Amino acid sequence: MAKVDVVERVTEIVAEVGGPLGIDLVDLEYKREGRDMVLRVFLEKEGGITLDDCADVSRQLSDILDVEDFMPDHYNLEVSSPGICRPLKKLADYERFQGHLVKVKTFDTLTDDAGNKRKTFTGKLLGVQDGMISIDLTEGQHASIPLDKVAKANLEFEF
Image: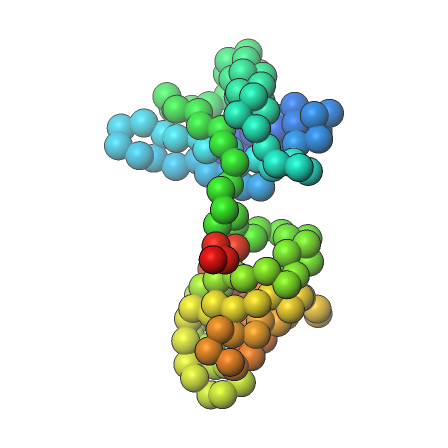
């Protein structure tokens, strides 16, 4: 099974296992580290994900993966919360975390409203509309970033 197919199937399984528990998939990584592959599953739920939640999903996911046996390589399974610097992956994430401090890295160099060229934007997320992320930058400028130019985005810890 190809890497993309593995990610798609594991995503489906996590939805089947986590859905009834009120647990949502935030992110999933399937990549080589050393000699083995690592399958990392990041979860969240309303009110916060617990260690018991992660353990429950891990056990159920592991059992299903053992039965279906579609993973092409030996792998290590890791199930956890996304942490305080949670990634923003879906459009709904940008809507949900409006008003929070974020860091956005872009594929290409873009310009903020003051004419500064950059690939990293940190500031208060104002929202997303028509495929554009709006951020009030910590330096006082404003930036509008096309969603399709985002290489990586995550919440930033606020002191």
